[in-house]
Image (cartoon, rainbow, N blue to C red; front, side, top):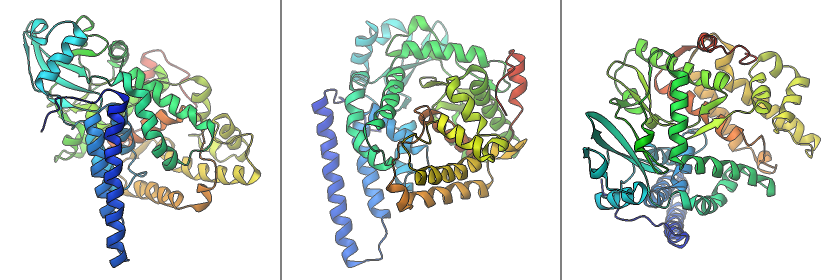
Amino acid sequence: MKTLDKIPTSKIGRTTELVKTGAKIGANYIKYYSKKAVNPSMDRSSLDEDNATDIYDGLKSLKGSALKVAQMLSMDKSLLPGAYVEKFSLAQFSVPPLSAPLVRKTFKKYQGAFPEEIYDTFSKDSVNAASIGQVHKATKDGKELAVKIQYPGVAESIGSDLAMVKPIAIKMFNLKGEDSKRYFAEVEDKLTEETDYTLEVKQSIEITEACSHIPNLKFPTYYPELSSKRIITMDWMTGQHLSEFAATDFSQETGNKLGQTLWDFYMFQMHGLKAVHADPHPGNFLISKDEELIAIDFGCIKEIVDEFYQPYFELAVPASINNPEIFREKLFELEILRKDDSEKEIVYFSALFHEMLSLFTKPFQEKTFNFADSGFWDEISSLSEKYSNDKELRKMNGNRGSKHFLYINRTFFGLYNLLHDLKATVNTHEYVKYLEEKGFKNHSAL
């Protein structure tokens, strides 16, 4: 893969790159409508593919927050056309890496020394490049290590990058008014945390220690003394990325075992730690040769505050969902319904979220749930299509829900997709025993 010798770090430089991308997209529309004039039955698939390619190509040269947002969107397969999902998902673990000279220069800037002055060996070429950093293999004192280096300028450009993608997000999610600022503030806060590698090392150590008792789950050891605000050093872990493993001919028993581990890991965090690894994409998990799940990235941790946790999980209980009075009360607590809503809006959004939550909470309603069930995913696709084509919805204010929904819903949807990739059937209540082992009792209303 071609390497990058430089990344635009100034606001002007980054904006210039996006303007170029915008020009390409404009040309794509002209080409599409010219062809459609000749062939009126032509669908949008070619336009979507051309636009997805040009947008991704523009973002991958910038790296940073804009590329991270594309990665986040790719996890929601029901939201974007398939061409966008396919292209944007490359941001999970396949983007052009920095060239060796730029790596060396960047490392010296962050760590105060060149790599060869700190490690016994250090690979000049990266083994994995993603949205905000890339990984190199190193050794020291007989240990094989993974060294994650943050791209230059990423932390400093978060605000300007989000400002550039904000108009697209506002249109995509039908956000209206000043109130939408809270969603962008939440994204900016979490991205800022993700660029603080000192915080990531601290979070990684805390979560790995707390979850080490869950079977079939492994973590690298982290080395704070070899890390800094923009560099992380951890054990080198050997395995296949989950998406690569999912494409192999594994047994149902193996899929169920790995899926159970993944489910228990997330439920323990949700209900015990009240803080969760909110970036569940395949690039953050490896499968070892012993068929163990390895979690390797804890940059994005979302704290779950009680005022959100309680009503959120109460709506996973059939008695709450199916009681109109309790259901409406919880919708107000979660800011899905607003005090300035008209009666028409209250009725409309109550019905919409009743339909959505009844579907998305299905895994919690049964002792075992099959995430490979095509019927479940067909229902999700149908529901997404129904509301994406609902003209009535487009007229209403899309600012719905607490800011905490952004990362918690992202976590659950990402988790569901990983379990689907593993074709896993899981015991949805088995995690309780791991909570009890650690002394957590009042974990949820489930």
